[in-house]
Image (cartoon, rainbow, N blue to C red; front, top):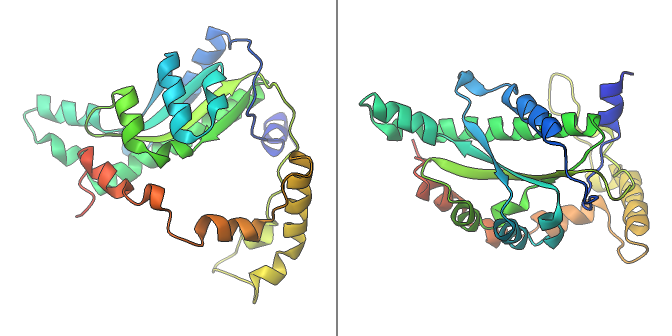
Length: 249
């Protein structure tokens, strides 16, 4: 093993941070890492908003339902950003809307997600902790309004960074045989049966993490999260289109 892999295998979400700020030179190094993340077609259609204004942080925390994120030393918002490409096309006398299609949206979304993970690995290698926030998509319009995002942009993920103020237990992961396959898709006769040992691991994890206040297992999380329509995000396609993206060919 090398140090990078050791860091990745020890990943855990950090929700509480020390109050110490991240030195600016370290922060800028993390941004350099983000800029050197692979990007589809070289268009670089994802950007980062560094959120320092406390009122905006609190609004984002409210949207995500996690008040503690407003206290993090750094809050970064990663966005699909085709506004830049649209402006360049317009300056060339071309139709800016052609920069904002379902294809370019997907490319920008992927670019943003890759940037987040690249920054997380770099941050953790420097002794920092991180928390990736997908719950900003509970209310995309609220994020767009709070940050003042223009047409042809869209929020993807939030990320809080800082020096860890806690040392949580590492969350168990599903055995590799369920997620790594060769040549074709493979599945067991019964997932409920095949995942019994993993369910037991998850029950123990939540029992220890929440000091006996929560008993849960992986298959129950599937039921709770995916067993019914997620009404809070039912309008997300409309929200994307309202930002100028043509989501239908």
